[in-house]
Structures are given as structure tokens and as C-alpha cells.
Image: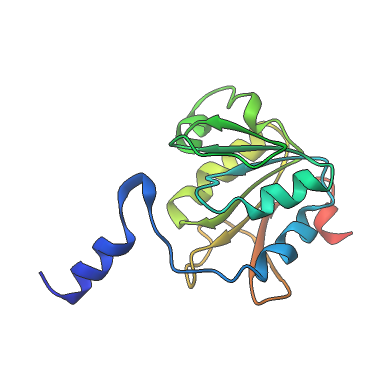
Length: 162
């Protein structure tokens, strides 16, 4: 095994995937961009609940999902679910009934499922990617303060353009 295998093993650890550090300064910009929605669902909350927590503190209704149990910040309801499985169901489930379904640090293999779920519940769909990964679905990039890009794949009410 070479150096690349060792690096991959450090970052790719199953349900506890460890991504390269992301500046906390970027999170407020994402929360501000999502603040136009009253009800939100964060898919794959992982161990970085700062955006969901900020939205809940600001009075938004927030549900978070992940494939493994995760502690949820105060004011955020957690539901264990897999967005890929949800995308294959006729009814994705109550957790996804929101004005906006979003994901942070979303790998390309989840973009289609995220968008499918958002379409089924008639919600907006937005996500950030893992570093240099491009979106795997048609999406409009929104450059944010702090250097992050929020990709908007669905915005039926034009909230992101307001």
C-alpha cells in the first residue's frame, strides 16, 4: 500500500467519514443564504451541526438526517434516514417535508438523490460540495462570503434570487 492508500484510509472511514477541515467562518454565510426558508432539512448532518444550529436559533424549523445516529443541536430534530433510500420511496418521509432540503460537503454520488427528494416534496434544493468536486446535477453556483459556493439545484419560489 502506498501513501495514497494511507491518506484515503485516514479520511474515508465508513459512516464516520472525515473530511478535510472547513473554516467555521464559512458557516454563517451558508446560514444567511438559507435563512429565507422557514422549514429546512439538512441531509447528512454528520459532526458539523453549526448551520442547522444557527438556523434553529434564528427561529427556523430544522430537521437533520444522517445514516447513523448523530447528536442534534438544541432546536433541531434528528431523524436517522438515508437520502438514497428516501429518493427511491414514493413518499420520502416527513423529515424531508421542508421549504428547502440542503446538504453540506455533499459528495457527488448523493446530489441526484438529494434533488429527487426535494422534487418529491416540492422543496428548494441546495448543497455545497467536497472541495473541488463539481455538482453532479444542474445547479446554479452562488459564491458566498468566506469562499464557499452554495449550489442551487432547485428553487421553485425564487427564494435564492430574492
